[in-house]
Image 1: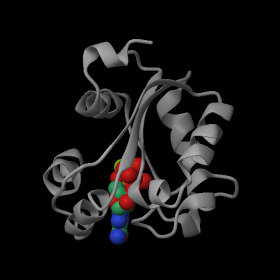
Image 2: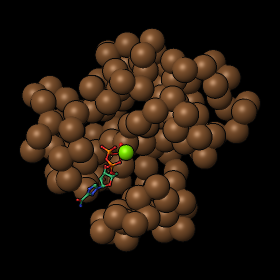
Image 3: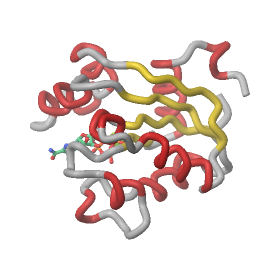
Length: 140
Ligand code: RTP
Ligand code: MG
């Protein structure tokens, strides 16, 4: 996959609260093109697989429970400098530390229920996009 892509999820709290449309609008207005998009739901096992990098962290079990608690939206996004620019758009993990105007500042309710996911590297963007979308679904 090209390095101008990132992967995002609108997490169960934000989707459940009816904020998916507003968040997707912010993403598009920030210059990201939606390449792939689906609504789906993770079970605990799949959430654990997706976040397995955190399996030794104290919040891992809660995170898997939370990420499987309701439907999510998964999307592959394209923009120059996508990974870094998207992390800036979403803001800090803890909404209390997120900058004004970021998605998490506006829509997150806690450090766990923080509205959106954003890949942290080009390599992980590719791995995470392919977790949800097959090759045909990733064609722009
Ligand atoms: P993400 O991977 O979802 O984009 O979030 P992130 O990089 O900003 O944060 P990360 O350290 O990768 O953590 C993954 C997700 O785990 C939950 N979390 N809970 N209770 C806690 O202390 C805690 N810390 C992290 C959040 O949902 C976080 O986004
Ligand atoms: Mg992360």
